[in-house]
Image (cartoon, rainbow, N blue to C red):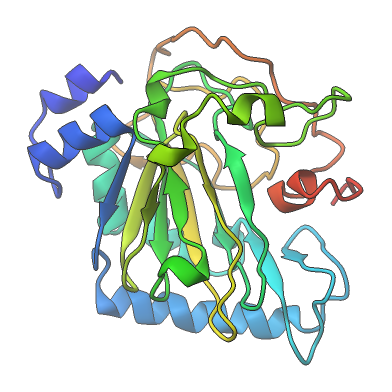
Length: 299
């Protein structure tokens, strides 16, 4: 759904100026947006996931872990598709204030794409290099976004997400390396084009949400805090008329579920001037493994 059509409808939870700002800059930050009740529920289930990961010796289709991960000191990078692992995650994605937020920015008919919980563990939790999301999962149009929830307070030291304002209106960059292998981030020759000096880092207290457009350039630094991790719960949504071009690299029973309104009868199309991602039908590791150029391993 085009921004003009979205803005012509009355908002449900955002102000009109907030919606206009999102479409102009490609991002939005709402501090203390999620209720304390939801925050407590999501924290509780997340702690159970962390405890379960202590028995994990290597990354698998559920947990992506750092090399130093162990039972005594777990070091998670990601919980893949949390909606598959506890009903609370799906209920939050499908029917909460973030679903209302998605409707305000995508239109009345909203489709769920995927979820992930990135931890960025304390004491050096890995950076996420500058990248755009749409190259991982191309759609027929760009009415696609990701909503992130900070489960704990996030400041400069813990590695907040950074965005380049307005980059969603610019180039869709090649995210392949010099050897023509997918790396899931910009290569060195393109980094100088994106205006890193204009980056805005989205900090905020627990319960704050970030929203970024599927073409917005974003990344985050390492977490250098000695004892505080940065769990960021991410849910991606699209307008119902935005259809995936390629299979989802992390399948879920909820991929494509309509969470607001109804399914589209027609697809809308925008030109997609970029290379398609690799064929991940044999398995997908994670953005961390790809960007750190670890050996790719089907999971």
